[in-house]
Every structure is written in C-alpha cells, then in structure tokens.
Image 1 (spheres, rainbow, N blue to C red):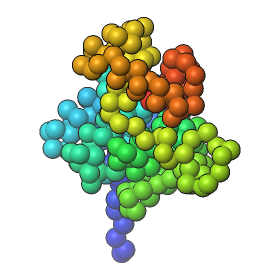
Image 2: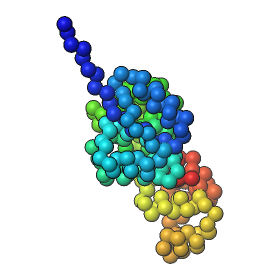
Image 3: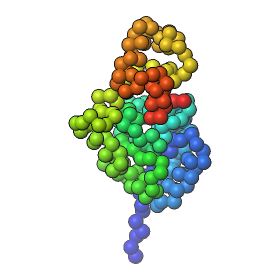
Image 4: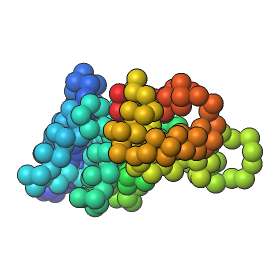
Length: 223
C-alpha cells in the first residue's frame, strides 16, 4: 500500500484590527490544505507580544491602518527583530508613497484587499519560498517610479521619508499649531517651517490641508 503524502501547511499569523475581516480571512485560509492560521492579532503590539514568546510563523499577513501600532511601524520592528520571517501586506493603500515606505521597513510583498483568494494563496507560498511577492499591479507602480518623465506625480526621490518627516506629517494632521508641533518635536519653530516648506515642494502641495489630505489618503500616518 502506498503511504498518504502529508501536506506541509504554511503557518500564518494574521494581523488586522477588524475582527470580522480577520475571522473571515482565517476561515478561508484554513480551508486550504496547505495553509494554517496559527494566531490572530488585532494590532502590531499584540503581534510582537505573541512573537516574543518564541513563536516563528512562516508568513505574517499585515494590515496597515491599525490602532496602537500601525503596519508601517510594525513592519519596521519585525524587520529588525525577525528579518527572516516574510511580511505580506494586505491593504487598501497601494500608492507609491505607502509602497515605498513599506519597502523601507522590510515588507516582502503587497496585495490589495480586493484580491482574489487564489492569488492570496499563491502570494503566501511565493513569499515563503522565494522571499518576495509583488502583484503585476504593484510591480507596475514601482517600476514606473524609476522611469524618466515629468508626467507622473511621485518618483523615488519624493517618496523617501526620514523618521523626522514622518513624525511631522503625523502632527500636521492634528489641530496643533506649527509652534506647538515644534515644541512637541523638540525643534526650533524656524526648522519646522523649513521642513514644512520642503515637504510642500517634495509632495507638490500648497497648504497644510493639502499636505494632511495627501498624507491620510496614502495611509502614511496612524489616525
């Protein structure tokens, strides 16, 4: 008699603050014979607490817009602590700004939340075996940033942010005055004004409102 071959199941951790979305996704993945959701977390903080106990999943599927610790910060911490565990982002934010920031934080793959289930399954196994997965849609966006031309809004140069710039962008989306932002960041008000003007030029906006709208639309800050 021939022995039944045991299928190796990919151990997956899901991180999403929307319970219904997370539960539905876990149920779908667990129906595949080669996938197993071993843990669910509602935030990056919960994920890091789980991993601190020594657990090592094969793939982490991560949302961006979460409370307490968003996907950007979570991905960066994961990359520093566990660079060998691939992170696959499942999100509605697929702009050049958010994609480049995720790349800076070590994310290995990107998918939009409207992806077909079979592609998600393929992405899980591809990122586990090959180390990365980019859909055709995302690959096209990233490749376009390296092409010369004046007809595109963002290039590689204006999608790279320092942590100081990201801190400013988050505070600029609040009702704090620029002087209050300077105080909170421990910087001179003139330096804050210069940073603001540089970001206006970098992101091609003319006002704080425009800066806030672009920042939130691209998921660059935690709301």
